[in-house]
Image (cartoon, rainbow, N blue to C red; front, side, top):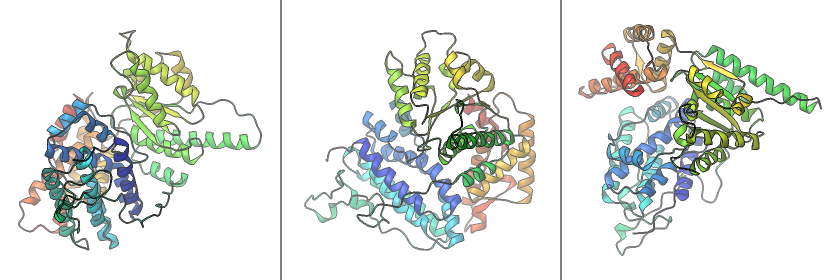
Length: 490
């Protein structure tokens, strides 16, 4: 067995491969969906690979936390969390972004979904090889997953055929990128290339950052959030005028661009924060524009001295972009003066001062609790003086979010199902309580509907494309969505 790979090497190969594939996606909606969803899907597949091998070690946690693409949140899983995810791996499921990719291929006469099967296979083999080898069990799992993706392409009618990659050729390969010679030709292994479609020895073209106009159009395309959209545009105008005054040699008064997002779960706070990080970059406030998302567990350690290191690491990752702290109120434990959360706040305030020209911090959480958080430290009050309030979505907006999820994932509602969904979400809104999850509840309903539809379609002898896309009244079950929301909130 070869020496295990380093987490840095895993991240480099993974980021290069996923970034290169994303650049090749021609359909904008499919490209956005891939950028948002692919990392989570691939990390879940890593759990599946390691579940097949049954050989989890603490080093696997570092490998798992290395699986993220440029501009996306960095995972911070702990050993027990990963061990649970691996042990309880539910089985391979077709990702929604892949369905959108297939739909885009059918509409544009392309076969990029076929190429994703190759990228997926190579990345899954990379996960298998982190311990220095690819076992037969891991290879079997990768083969089965790749076959599922290819079969979906076949059934949908995507042009092209099954990939020519033979997973068995990778068994016992070296992890430094060179083939292994074991004396048997059938055991020779090939290293997965980070970007098969790129010419050897050439640098992939730089990914063009979205323009301010494109980002504002994406903001306007979000459902609801009228006041938030107005506040964001006002903030942009303020920044623009400040730059013009600087260029004209006029005095520019000091201004904090750090923000407080207040509102209930599922109201779009993270989505808007991600857009704002890119907007700040587009208008020249930030040098990179990435979003690093953390909560208390990503900043606070359980013993003296380590919280400062952990918080500083998060700040360093966010330099040039936005550090988004969800449920920030959990850092200010009013009942315990010695709570390590206070140490995190002190380090955070120092980082905001030291990097005030290239770091934006956005703190988010429930409205009432965020007020307590800001008043817990005078330094917080002086640095956070802009508040965005995210209202709950009403019944009509919840229904529109549901329709949008259906469209983006290649599902269609007939008239009866659309009407039933609208009525159900209106009822959900009217009956909302402290467990109301807004868009999270909508996603629960959507996922339950997709699962119900899958059971229905699987019973058909020869389902057609329209059957695969149709969601009917029978597929909708709002009560399941409510129950799932309560479990999630609990």
